[in-house]
Image 1 (cartoon, rainbow, N blue to C red):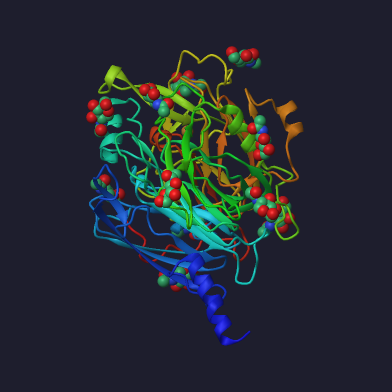
Image 2: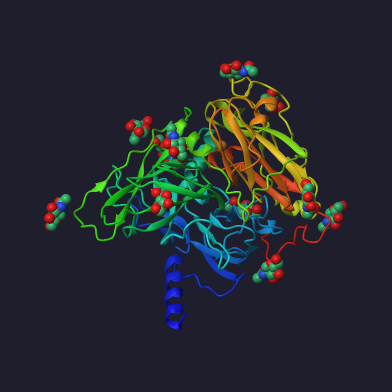
Length: 560
Ligand SMILES: *[C@@H]1O[C@H](CO)[C@@H](O)[C@H](O)[C@H]1NC(C)=O
Ligand SMILES: *[C@@H]1O[C@H](CO)[C@@H](O)[C@H](O)[C@H]1NC(C)=O
Ligand SMILES: *[C@@H]1O[C@H](CO)[C@@H](O)[C@H](O)[C@H]1NC(C)=O
Ligand SMILES: *[C@@H]1O[C@H](CO)[C@@H](O)[C@H](O)[C@H]1NC(C)=O
Ligand SMILES: *[C@@H]1O[C@H](CO)[C@@H](O)[C@H](O)[C@H]1NC(C)=O
Ligand SMILES: *[C@@H]1O[C@H](CO)[C@@H](O)[C@H](O)[C@H]1NC(C)=O
Ligand SMILES: *[C@@H]1O[C@H](CO)[C@@H](O)[C@H](O)[C@H]1NC(C)=O
Ligand SMILES: *[C@@H]1O[C@H](CO)[C@@H](O)[C@H](O)[C@H]1NC(C)=O
Ligand SMILES: *[C@@H]1O[C@H](CO)[C@@H](O)[C@H](O)[C@H]1NC(C)=O
Ligand SMILES: *[C@@H]1O[C@H](CO)[C@@H](O)[C@H](O)[C@H]1NC(C)=O
Ligand SMILES: *[C@@H]1O[C@H](CO)[C@@H](O)[C@H](O)[C@H]1NC(C)=O
Ligand SMILES: [Cu+2]
């Protein structure tokens, strides 16, 4: 190849991934600077000052390759405490860079700095980063794209171009005021006012704006990296007249399948390929609407963006698309059940065949007495009846330095009281409070049955595990039946992910290997449920061998 061809090739690479991305070598160190600043968003109809990274909303996209090391210097210029989580990044031995406040670090306080330092080992695909403190992730979030190693192709035809499609939720009010109001009253917080696609709601009654536009050429294949960065809503995504081929979820490859609707829960990602029609022009609506199949109030607005064929006349009409109804359980279930891990020679499925820890976790809502709350009661949430109480110092720090009195490692492996979890709600809806963790030896294998309860109301919960992906070996409705349901487990090609939507009034079974020492948060990725206490953590001890220990804390780790 002549030098001009090389330059052309380099030009293409740069165009594909944006100008911040330079190709040099395998295992590069990539520096990013996150200046966290307040910014008045004028782009949106509902202008207000928001917390942003580098003044951008959505935040900047991080591009890297598998094996690269990221050094992200976060400088806090706002009056809130901060921390950033690299959602889905395994953080092998670098739990200190995981990010959930008071779990793996103390917050980065105003005017302080912390440099996250971690390597993207054994992963490639679409992930996201977001604030992991208060409700700041509503505006502090962005895409984290891990390309395959230099020279390694995708296990599917390479697209012409790649585009990020970031879905989010927007409140007209200040988001911290919304959640603080709810904490004071003990009642659910106000639902959001709109959904967003790449920062825009599209034309909605009180805001007749155009929405974001994805420009495409006819007759090409495009990759859409769809990310749900919403706080509380599982979302359907559709494009008028275009089918989507799902190729990857949560940065793990799946067996490709074609669908006209995808479901993506907060914290989940779905990468799809679409073909644009040859010899055509036109504008096609891309729509996002919520999924909620229980009687819980939700922002039911539809956000839209436009897939615009280059060359389409400006007076052309836009082809609309109908989204599924709010409670389209069958569409949601069918999509979830279509996901299978690729399980190829290069990307084998490594589901643990034997389990050392067989856990049953009930997840749901409860109500505790509260003298100062409206109606004398506070809505809470729990796992195995434990409403998690956030510590005042970092759990990881307490674990590493053997500080006692911060947490106990007696988290219940099973519900202490058995009841018909998905039957009539018991009369006693109270929970216990505690900072209880579950301890795992290095390299032990774990199965968790995540069992939704109908306490107060059954509801789908997207459960997110930090530090490890898991395999979803089964799921179903009603109460998990050990004898029967285990027979149907998929041990061959279960989907591998980091966040699983547990079906409303049902269960999901996950398996993982605890081969990453540290303290790993597991929680509902509906922020409202996390706030209410639907969270716990695993503490994974060091192994004996080299490379099986947590690295020492970085010198600039924030203190409480
Ligand atoms: C990042 O962490 C590695 C250890 O994993 C260490 O060798 C390196 O010095 C760190 N870099 C910075 C800039 O802190
Ligand atoms: C929540 O909604 C109620 C009713 O619409 C409204 O009065 C209240 O101001 C809202 N709270 C915030 C923080 O926006
Ligand atoms: C796109 O076109 C290719 C080649 O014809 C085909 O194999 C693939 O299934 C198409 N994808 C979608 C989502 O229609
Ligand atoms: C279920 O999903 C498959 C693949 O995603 C699709 O082909 C089929 O039409 C769907 N069926 C229903 C009833 O939605
Ligand atoms: C959303 O819910 C509100 C209040 O329940 C209702 O008035 C409105 O018609 C709903 N909108 C849609 C698009 O379903
Ligand atoms: C758009 O404008 C062109 C040229 O001005 C005209 O021929 C065409 O009919 C218009 N199309 C629509 C949909 O109005
Ligand atoms: C914590 O306790 C373990 C086990 O007793 C010991 O190996 C380790 O050195 C202790 N760590 C610190 C920082 O004291
Ligand atoms: C649990 O409750 C559901 C709904 O009321 C009922 O259909 C089911 O039979 C009950 N299961 C058991 C084991 O009692
Ligand atoms: C949960 O704990 C509370 C407080 O100890 C207790 O009253 C309640 O019976 C427990 N509920 C269940 C289902 O274990
Ligand atoms: C982890 O355990 C598996 C068996 O479950 C074993 O094959 C593997 O060698 C172990 N790995 C380490 C690092 O100990
Ligand atoms: C910020 O974090 C520090 C350390 O945990 C804490 O002392 C302080 O109260 C926090 N500030 C706010 C405003 O919450
Ligand atoms: Cu939840």
